[in-house]
Image (tube, rainbow, N blue to C red; front, side):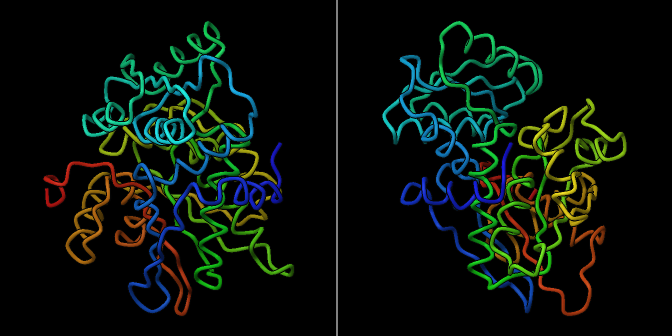
Length: 314
C-alpha cells in the first residue's frame, strides 16, 4: 500500500542523489517538465534510488531488474552511485543506445526474450536464485513513491497547474505523479487533472479501465521499448482507477504517427531531444486528443532522452 505521505518521504530520502529537473514555460500556461535531463536520461532513477535506499542492508547479490532499457539504466546508475552490483535483464527489442548505456554504467546485462514480460520472468527467476534485491520497473510501492517526487517538484516549480499530461507504460510514473501532485496541492484541492497518454499499440491503462482490472495487451510500435509493458501494474490500477484518484485521471491514446511528429516537433521548435516514449505525452496535445480549455495551465512531462540523436528528424 502507498499513501500521499510516502512521496514527500521519498523526496527526503533521495535528496541530493537526483536532479531537480527544470521546467520550461514554452507558451503562456504551457509548461514542459524536462525530466529527460534527469540522471540516466529518465525519471526512473528516482524510483530506483528510493527502492534501494528503503531496503536497508542489501544482499551480497546486489540488485536486479528487468527493463526495456530506461529502468535498467536507472537501476544501474543508482547501484553504481551506491556502490552495489546491478544485474539487468533486457528484451531483444531494447534499443542499442540503451544497451550501450548499461554497459557504460558497469551493469551485468542479460538480453533475453522478445518483449519486456519475458525478460521480467527471467529476472525474477534469477533473483530467486541469487537473493538479489528486485527493483521492479513500475509495480512496487517504493518505486511509485520515488517517481511521484517528479509531481511534487513540478507543483513547487510552477506554483500549481490544472492538468499534468504524462505517458503511461506499466503505470508507475502516472500513479506516482497522481500522488505527488495531490500531496503538493492546497488542502481544499484534490490536485490537478492527470491526462494519461498511451500509444494505441501499448494500451495497458486504457484496457484496464475498460475491463475493470489490469488485463494483458499486445504491445508494439515506436515506443514499445519504453512503454511496452503487457499489463498495467496493480498498484497503478489502484491509484489511477480507484477512489483515491478522485476521478482526476483521463486516459487517451495516441498513434505512432503522432508520437513521431511530437518527437520531431520537440526537437525542431525547442531543441529538446526526446526518445519516442518521452514525446508521447506531448503528442496528445499536438494531435488534439487532449485539447486544453482557454486559460488552462498544463504541464507536459517530457520523460526520456535515451535515443539516437541522428534519428531526431526522421
